[in-house]
Image (tube, rainbow, N blue to C red):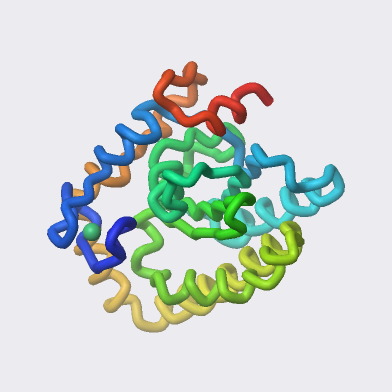
Length: 225
Ligand SMILES: [Zn+2]
């Protein structure tokens, strides 16, 4: 994976980025340590209409039907200037307790598409189970394809493009992995070691928790919905 701060290559299990000193603890200090109770489709910014939400939910369900270990989630929010969307996405995927995702699909197999409606930027984070199948280059291309729609504020179309393009990449990799599993097993095997620190399976309990005060405003807004 790439460090969410300096974007240089680091090992998932690294407690700290050897290049810039970044650690997940820095993000916990900024955004909070607790779980964030949310749904696969979290529209804190209120950008989707009801009809669009229904369509979007269908796409996310179809994604799960296609990939039994994975789930796709999307968060629309208004981030403040202090927030780095890439870091925020990584933090949220680590802390999200997705109440409409089955426990058989841990966050390690999650994809999180974060859209900041203030800056009109977006980011894709994914859990370590996907490390063998997705690269930052893939997600960059997927985001580039959706970029024109994000600029237009056509969020439903942007989401459609992201889900479809990402599914296409995963389908291609999955069929490749079936043909030559060694390469993928090797990547996945290496990643398994000491992974716990960075991407914990925090969804072991699904009890809702109250938000801690140090969470950001937009998280608290989210709970009020
Ligand atoms: Zn770094």
